[in-house]
Length: 337
Image (tube, rainbow, N blue to C red):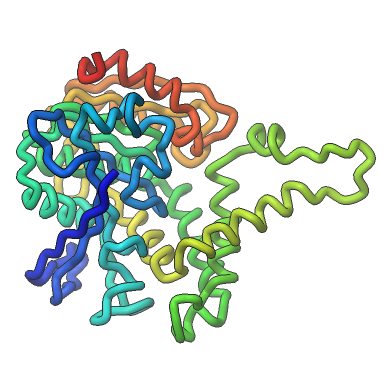
């Protein structure tokens, strides 16, 4: 995937009332320099991922894989509020760190639609996203129905649930307990809170069975369990090493704005505007976005279908169960024939 940067130099008005007066910058990757006649696949990434889909989804994106980078024109753009090259708390002089304004899911879509126009894309042959990427994908398909031919939503929802919001708030509370977070001396602030928040999130990304399979104690005579403990510490530090607490806080706030029905007569009415052939993939062990969320979307979209895949690893199955996801995509979309 090739890395690019697009700058929109006009003031960017935000849905919640703020404004990024100096414009925005979007970091994005494409599978090639020129689209040519290649079908367009637009991948919307999840919460803390980056725009290089070949990096974090390397089982599906790459030469000769399902999302063949030599066959398709693949686009993945980093979201507003992140710290991977797109305008966010880490790179916004007018509103740094905790001064960064509230960015909604619709703002993420608005920004990427500007990029889409810049690239001259008039039709997206497949728009796909998992988790938070699914938030963006379903919102985009509602707000611009004629743009999207095929839509795939994996382990996501049409509206943020109380359970999901509670998890986001718990993580924000963890960030706020770190005194260095409010000091805002530099982007290293809130590192301990960030590690704690990530540890908490892992408990909804995985599940009982997944931890039982991978983090069990190998010594039958152990005195004190350590393996799962060190795994939580490792996951926390891993995010600290690649992300910052201010971007994470901003993105967590954005999750709570996900409501496709806002101003559209409710969720079902909004989903009814989608004209794309839609495939919703739920994961049987996902406790963050249960299968019922996928079924709700599929039942409300005029041309919607739902498939349920099996995984021992809960929500993270959208990253791990690539073979089952591939089978579902081949079954429903002739793009991969």
